[in-house]
Length: 342
Ligand code: ATP
Ligand code: MG
Ligand code: FE
Image (cartoon, rainbow, N blue to C red):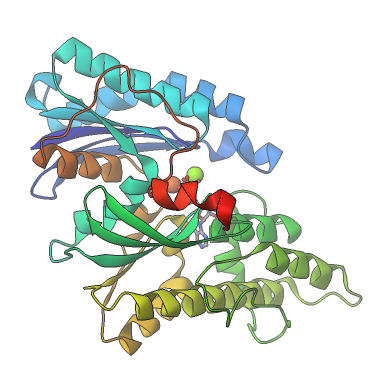
């Protein structure tokens, strides 16, 4: 099938045309970094407005670049959550309107499922079940991916997401927004053994994550007199975060012997130190690490279109009154257990 994908859940406005044979026919991403940079983070109202202004021209551009019209696509897939509700609504309403106007099926995509299935867009040999480490700006979870639409959450963060910790560390170091890539660049020149930082929850039996204490420790380190060199703080933070991801993932891998691969996805998966550490861990289990190409790690529409391909093949589509959702867990069972524990 040929699917038009639309993404607008955070601060990237994106559209893409993806085929069932894994070809990305055309793809456009408009980032809003410049708009949000003065505020040191994403401002929801500014994001929603920017999505409104940019999305329609992006959709036109991907169709034009591929030399096709809406009549040629098999379905339209749009992110329906989770994310900043104003932005999600812009993409969702646009997707529904295009589906209604063209008479094509509409498919509502969970943004996290877009990340979760993104490695399969690049790697045709990746089959279910796999263990997924989803590390992004808003989430840090270990999920058993048993099939399309079949996700079991094994662990989650009890406070901040890993990407959030990268962003806050960047802010503390005065590196600006967005933080992850800036921390990685600075860390490349630093000594990761220079600053002693904690590894929260490492060694505990359940594979949950915690990054709030790490971020606070970075703040205390920077406020010390004399303060350590910023590149050493960045490198030490990155190493600590990697140690946490590796230690927690090892427990989940132990608990999932049926996994055919260890997969990482989400914005933090773009980090080379993270990829190296996780590849070494996968090797311990005789598994390969599957990580999407860097451009597929952070938010994009190709992964949304691909999730659309996977659902379309299973005969799925969604009604045009499907609501936008600010929160939308991939594993509802785990979410309802929240009150009872984590
Ligand atoms: P979610 O997917 O949870 O809704 P999001 O869509 O905002 O959140 P992504 O776009 O998947 O998140 O990822 C963005 C996050 O990834 C940011 O926190 C950013 O700092 C982080 N990130 C991006 N590149 C890197 C990198 N090279 N190193 C570390 N972190 C990175
Ligand atoms: Mg972004
Ligand atoms: Fe994302």
